[in-house]
Image 1 (cartoon, one colour):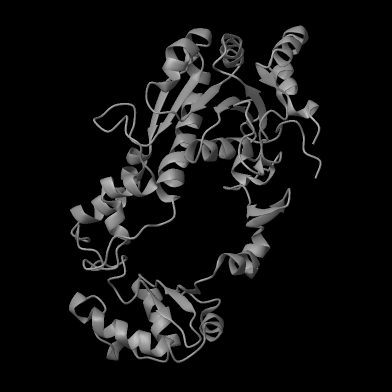
Image 2 (cartoon, helix red, strand yellow):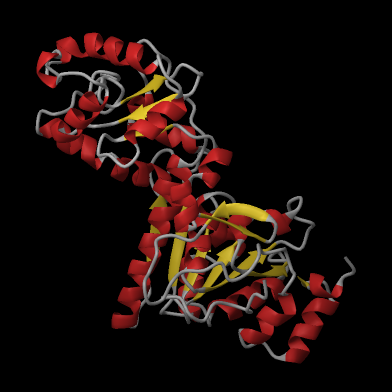
Length: 393
């Protein structure tokens, strides 16, 4: 594919973002902004960087400039880029960017319209702010990890690191950035964003708090609620060939479709609204689903409102007819990956460039963002900036 220098069609076309290279939620937020058309420049270290960066889909859609920020000329280069930016994203621990010389006060003095986005695990303040942490820790400290337990006797699980990092972190960060950029266009002033994964995960549990207040959920009792594996109508069941089904007809009308497709009389079954009867119903459904293959049940429930679907592996998910029809997964630059989401009708998101390779577009970026050619030459010559476009492959 012939990629343009940067997006020009998406809803964020014209928005300029500086991403200080990091891991996890910051890059994910930057990817989302790039998919939506922002000109996102990743500021990388001059070193070799990660192995096979050209395949790192999380870094798709942006260009890279490799700058030694420990040199005075490198810091000044970054601040000159800041003067032309709408957004800066950094993911250091609190106080590190300030010590390096590009904290929010310094940057916003150069550019009062700048939206300066901190992305951390624990936030900029609080007794744990300076501590290290990972997805599992943020889930644990908010209570969210208990929601993934099957029952009170099972150990809390260790899910892959995408709930806190990407939903509670990167997605919340991108939402905050778009909100702040919109406000800056009205007011003429930027602001500082304190995006913390622990805050984002807590926000994701708002429904649980709401249902608890309504008497519809029991906190700290995993596996006893209607959609945490406790009920027979929101669970997974094994099939005769070792496959699995996701069974989720929560609403009574959908539940009726499921039991009727199973050949059962809803009136003859134990009361589904009585938690004391749930174990009995679970056993009944488990026995039925174990009598046929996953393919059999998939065909039986296809096109119905029973809310029964196969549990697919990643390879199967990419080939499922619904995902194929929608183009949910695409292959770009040799990597199969999810397509941009959500889908906008008039200004759609798009993968506009392959992943950023450290320093691949250093000269191009600095020229596009207003640095004089002779200054760019000096920066490259003295090693402050590395331009890998000039280096042999």
